[in-house]
Amino acid sequence: MRKPGVAFEDLPTIDIVLLSHNHYDHLDVATLTQLRQRFAPTVLAAAGDARIVGPIGFKDVRELDWWDEIQFNDTLKVTFVPAQHFSARGLFDRQKSLWGGYMIESRGRRVYFAGDTGYSTHFSDIRNRLGSPDIAMLGIGAYEPRWFMKPIHMNPAEAVCAHRDLGSKQSIGMHFGTFQLTAEAIDQPLADLERARAENGIPEVRIRDPARRGNANFSGQTHRENRVNARLPAGKALGTSGDRS
Image (cartoon, rainbow, N blue to C red; front, side):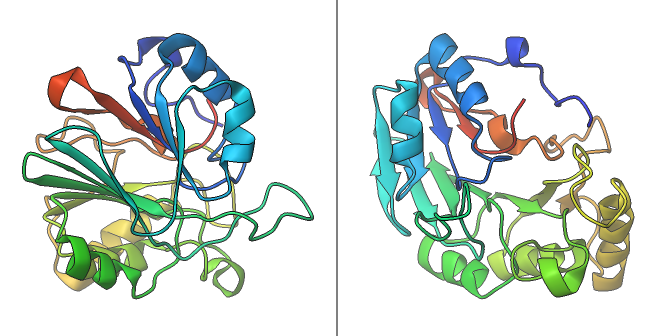
């Protein structure tokens, strides 16, 4: 296991936490407890997950179905969007809650967080319904063996397809490089992304990998996408769900 891109004590003030689904590496009660104690943020969660988040003590927890949107002020809107994945915390609650991603819109700009997902038509659906994002955060790890992982996690080649389906101006690879989760080597997603970019004629400036430090356009995290912080209007900061710290 590698350290997170940003240490917990170095996080800026977080006003909103976005939870994509209830898998333990994306909804960690201990981390959420720390966030509540330090920031007392609003939490957006997939439908069915308030039962997990509510007992932690957050004062404002809102469950969302696909395509539900919340307008926080005149300049910030968040929409919960479809993904191809599943949910479960144990043996008897599989598919008892929802899963998804988020489109964050502010001042004419869009940032898309895909959450955990396999490749499917929902990327085109999101583009057609909400418009193309300026930045898309797309999973590129935990994809081998394909016979098992393909329905729920994209590989880098599929992430390139998703980038195109979305019409994203730029995309960033995430969900890799912290835990040795599946059969591919921990840094194999970087090599596979490089190959997929070259085969599809997409320059690096359009799809970034977070191992390349000092990017001018935007910087990224690895698997620890749970608090990729975006500075928002009126001092707001937002964190997306990911694995525990």
